[in-house]
Image 1 (spheres, rainbow, N blue to C red):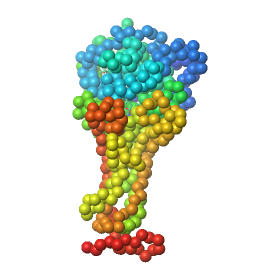
Image 2 (image 1 turned 45 degrees about the horizontal axis):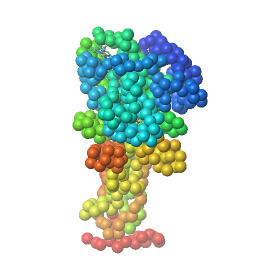
Image 3 (image 1 turned 45 degrees about the vertical axis):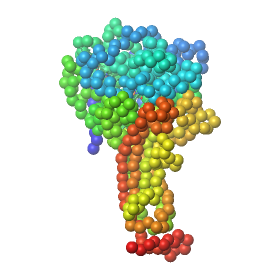
Length: 494
Ligand code: HEC
Ligand code: HEC
Ligand code: HEC
Ligand code: HEC
Ligand code: HEC
């Protein structure tokens, strides 16, 4: 049995204080709707904040169309320290973070290519939206725009100073974090009430121990028409993991899937702890780790993916007859992901079944569905994916700013399963046994999408085999059945 660390550190006095200050902040920021932090299941106010008075936009949403805010402060780059400063004491955490995808959220070539397109198409109006999550420090203190991609300016991604200076949230999506560094007092917010550092002050933050902390960036809606584009937090919110108190941190801030105990110190002069929250933030994007030449992180991502699902044949026939039309069922269960499988970036993330029926005798393929052809999964592949649509109902592959609706969503809910089936004719001339195999594959984006964004030959997408199963089914030797209407086959005897 997998057990999750749920060692939450909640001194109630501090917690109450935190909640009160948070509520106060919220009521100042948005007179309505103010929500109670304890009612986690009340999702009504999850809708993106709607402002009807255009004059209020600048005041309430200084980084419109994102929901980011700074507690009224004007931020400058010197208010944030470089991660290398933290490295001297938090060396292990630094190394882990440095390898993570979040450290590259600005440098990521796929992001940059798509962001450039989005910015050109919207005449820069979308810039703050994307940058809010992909470079919070760039947006709030460096006037970042998409043009900085062309000038090859390096902007900080989601780094130590972003996360440990978030003092509250004003909602659960579209960058609704409050980034409020306190240079004078030099405070870092974190999960422990007894952390003492010789370099900086520490402040206990209940928020950091919860999925709500991640929600501000891992929940994206279209800023104008509210289409729920990427809703990892909402998927988790509705899941059994939420009921059990298992947060994003419990799966993504451990050294690897299923590893729950990570005793040690988080800093050289730190206290010895039962469990240190690690900062690998492993997801599924082994392709991006390959691009940045990090084979070990790529392998961790593959392990994460392998821990997510099981695959099995169900209701298999005992034997089949040549010439018979048969149906084979495959069941895929999301056993390990605390959200839909897959979740996240909907233009790309795809999980699919590569199903094959071969003649065991001569290894010829009798039937196949799920091959990769011309850089994408072949038509009719049984896949688990979101299909986005525009206002005319046409499929949107890439131009996410045009999204107006979800056309289809076949992803598998947390702890849920999906059954797919294949119906095909057993050829009249096969004998012996039919070998069936079903392999569950993942890629973060299709080769076609990458070639379109980066140009051909720039990046090879890593197709990850998550899990696989196989079975043998006997083929009867009879030549025909007597029942009326059944196909008559002539099978050579041997
Ligand atoms: C001189 C050493 C030193 C430096 C430099 C340093 N820290 Fe720390 N930090 C510590 C120690 C020691 C602790 C306490 C660890 C414990 O008690 O387990 C700590 C704790 C923390 C915590 C946990 C706070 C809590 O309440 O749980 C955070 C977050 C943190 N540091 C962030 C940072 C960041 C970000 C930087 C870089 C800007 C940084 N630290 C630089 C020594 C340092
Ligand atoms: C994406 C946000 C994010 C980034 C980036 C990030 N942290 Fe953290 N960090 C967290 C959260 C959340 C926790 C608390 C996890 C929990 O307790 O559930 C945490 C915990 C910590 C702790 C306390 C660990 C423990 O178990 O006692 C330290 C120290 C720390 N972070 C330092 C850093 C440093 C240094 C960096 C940069 C090298 C960094 N963090 C980058 C979100 C982040
Ligand atoms: C300030 C915004 C922000 C916050 C807060 C944040 N993330 Fe992220 N996260 C991102 C962005 C942006 C990416 C994608 C980077 C890319 O691929 O270019 C990302 C990527 C990831 C990935 C890698 C996904 C993959 O495909 O491999 C994981 C896992 C992840 N985040 C987990 C978390 C968790 C857990 C938390 C909360 C403790 C959190 N994040 C908080 C912005 C954020
Ligand atoms: C029970 C463990 C568990 C919990 C809880 C969990 N995740 Fe995951 N997460 C996984 C696994 C396993 C994968 C790899 C399979 C996949 O891609 O869905 C994953 C993948 C991801 C990815 C990569 C997206 C993709 O599908 O390629 C992101 C981003 C992510 N998680 C963010 C989050 C956030 C944010 C939360 C909290 C709201 C969270 N996760 C909660 C286990 C978990
Ligand atoms: C509310 C926060 C948020 C906003 C706004 C946002 N993103 Fe992201 N983006 C994320 C997160 C979180 C991920 C990682 C999800 C995952 O791993 O599947 C991500 C992933 C991506 C990826 C996939 C990167 C990869 O290597 O697989 C691309 C491309 C991307 N975003 C582009 C954009 C563009 C362009 C915009 C603006 C139109 C934008 N994002 C707006 C949070 C955001």
